[in-house]
Length: 243
Length: 212
Image 1 (cartoon, rainbow over the protein chains, first blue to last red):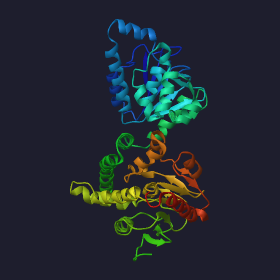
Image 2 (image 1 turned 180 degrees about the vertical axis):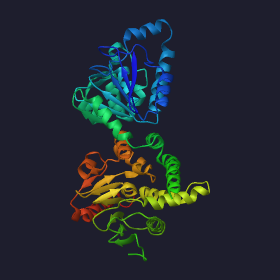
Image 3 (image 1 turned 45 degrees about the horizontal axis):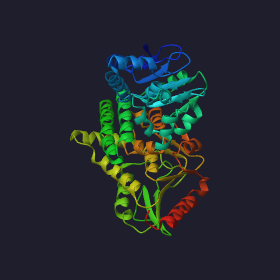
Image 4 (image 1 turned 45 degrees about the vertical axis):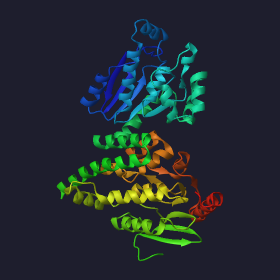
């Protein structure tokens, strides 16, 4: 079960299935519900966390086998991937606040956020190989954004657990905090990123960042001009009205 | 020094070219500054024989960035014609040429290095900072974002999350944080900035023999 709530203009998605917050299905929440919640409440940043002591231990293998039997696995995975893509595609900062265990599908959710905060006691891994499986929600593709091909192979085939320090060193995590403080740290960061900033400003900066991340430099620079001009014309108009 | 530049000067010394912001204390990047810089980049820098280029500043600070009022006034004028402001494209092109130069380009930054001043510093592949250097993108406080490629170039140095934080929270970075984040490459005492830049250029030149 996934809970969505908000503090002012910051939305908080909590993965809840104690104790490990295992995912019972790849589409751990309804994409449309999430999008509607964000739009209706004019949300400026999204935090994803686990309820309790852990982020998420990932998918339950038994749930995967059930879906194989029901022949629904491929369609479920497609839906899960669509959900993760729609999270990454949001033009507001998405922050994963990671406590405790963040494994498999849980790590794939965390990697679809833009920013990852890990508590000092967090553990990250793709342990799927234990069950002779591999990550199924884009984890294999996302790893290349952070680590070398060689390191990816090790993480996927050896299934070794990365502690918070290691995750930070590899670039899988962006910030590290005291145990139990990842959510507070995420809220403080989200406030810093949104305070006093208009929705258009946040959206345009996020678009520019994603362009820079994904496109060749010349293309990203071209797009940046349009994003900048959109903001400048609004500000110029405001200035005009004042005069 | 070439011509009668008022905001930025260009000269060559011992095969090293120097671009210097010469409107202290703040070295504000006005439209005059950008015009002069663009002229220098077009006429003095492309295809020249020097070993490398240093972007530096006169006075205590690198630059406090663009003149926001001037920028908005220009935006207003161009908005009437319904097209993108050509000055923005032109300034961006100037930075692009600096970044793409097939020679070592070094920025030496001290004091305040804000907004488009920070973007200019990022147009160099190597940044040397003085311990007193402060880096920041304050554009968001004016409802704007960096518009001269700073986001893209900063992201190449430090990644998504920290770039987002710098741009959206308008946080001011001090030299040692900037070094640990990979945003600057070196910290040296202010009186050693110029020598360190020359050293870096000489070293790269030695190894690359002008095929940089």
